Image (cartoon, rainbow, N blue to C red):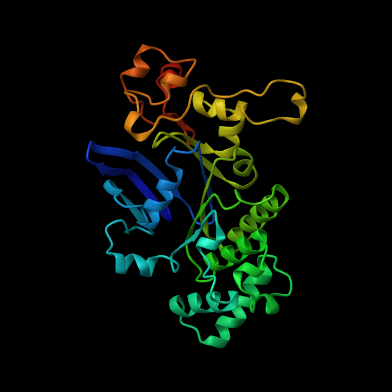
Length: 322
């Protein structure tokens, strides 16, 4: 049984002009210790998916259909009080800006210890020992001294390491990591990705890694789900999707990655832009930007299909496979 299951998830945003669909029929699952990369352009629905799992959707967005299950238990129907017991203890979160997760008025050690005391059956002395050990595990030097520091006294990379420790301190089963490296220098990004990868393997924690960076996905994830306009358009093992992409959108993402061997060549890009929620076209939402589109692409929304674990939502791919 999957550790985390998302089934036919639909998120709507009511407006005075009608309901906008932010997520449509999103289905994903994660196994213990697995890192699932969720990738796509801004507006694809990546962060909305993570927020739906955490039940932290921005108002007035709401889950209109589908379900989210953690270890077989539905959590999308829990009350806010019930979900507060799940967050931190069973599902951790790492956000793009660590200052949104850290209280600037409290020392680093106090925040780690308080989280553990709230979720684990341990005393203050053990909480302190665990906090120091976690800071050491995430690569923070002199962790005993850093326990006394305030968030503003640490660099961005160090703060993000503290947030990873904070996400792991209550020993959750799942972590939702939303763009955890975007605000960091490239060299620090690689260090944070390595730390996250190593710790999650050690702790057996499943990670939903949300990013727009296919390079991060290639280095870190076991499987990848490519999203476009609120839907999953391709999913499969990371090597399969990166080496043999099937959906035209995934091919466009891969072609847009700079390559050292392609010196002097013009970078490729996908024409057009991601449609807004109020302007999602009929049929396959990608068809206005797709060089392979045919008439039927504008009429029918393709379902995820394919043999084995590599699946694609593209009418042309399905037709070719048939």
